[in-house]
Amino acid sequence: MAAYKERIDRLAMLVTLIPVHLAKEDCPDPGRLLTSMAEQYDLRASRRAIQRDLEALVKEGRIAVVNPGGKPLRYRRLVDADAVDLRMWDYARQLMGALIRDALPERRLERIWAKLREEGDEFGLGEDKLCILSDTQRLLPADIREDVLAATLEALSLSQTLQAAYRDREGKLTRPTLHPQALLQRGPRLYLFALKNDETEPVRMYALHRFISAKLGDGAARVSGSFNLQSAVRKGQVDFAGDHQVALELRVRGYVAELLRDCPLSENQLIEEEPEGSPFVARVRATVPDTGQLLRWVLGCGANVEVLAPARLREVVAAQAATVGALYRSESR
Image 1 (cartoon, one colour):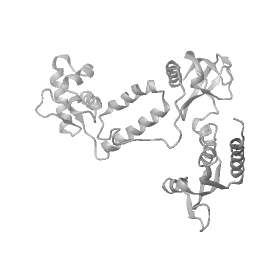
Image 2 (cartoon, helix red, strand yellow):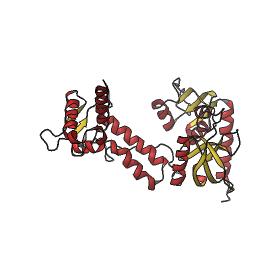
Image 3 (tube, rainbow, N blue to C red):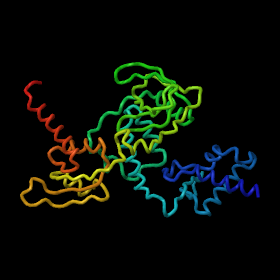
Image 4 (tube, one colour):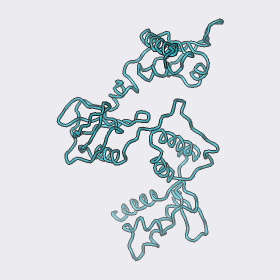
């Protein structure tokens, strides 16, 4: 029974070492696989044993020979009918690359992107056929020291303290002992939620690009009993979401009208045509989170949007528009 289980485990391990999407010439051969699994095979009969295992996996339909008759034979893992289509995977990978590009400084991007591509080749969707663009102004990512990021990730994963040198937005330098709770990527900036020194509350947010240095501490990180990352996001602590929902009513025109027909604000969005003679083409109603994101989006739409409700948002937008208008009417520069 033990030998049978060992074989099952060995075959399972062998399958994981055989990629799905590699080009034929890059697929592994028995010798390469044996190097990775030397401890699993008897030294005297290892090559024949791994060959028998590979033949068994081929018969089971879990792997396939990609170069029949070749020397040496090379293998590729097969996928089941429910697996993701290769071109869908390629598209998803390109999308991940676009997200990484917006979040990482250029000098670090190539290494990460190369690692992401190790899982397979491109399947006809190169940069000449597929381009992914953000519809917001792209900012260069905040410059984070690589050793700081590495130490932060290590401290967070091991639940240990982080010894840091941190310069706040006013320029004040402190050297706190931080107790990491969570990381949040917010647009092009990365934030650490952490307790400071001997404090039990509050959990503070630290921008990683403001760290001068950071190294793994010796002690275990103290865990906040009241902090929950998803709850903090929902409550709007990081301004990207909020618990409070509002009934939004807009009048829209131009590109915004077309955009909201294609990409609704919410599942319950309703669009009605405006009456003839209206300066707008449609009226939109939707229930959305009350956040800073919403305000910035409305302001970014400019004269293509009029907020009808809620009244408080309409007042804020009107005040912002008046302030901006005054700036542009001013002759002093």
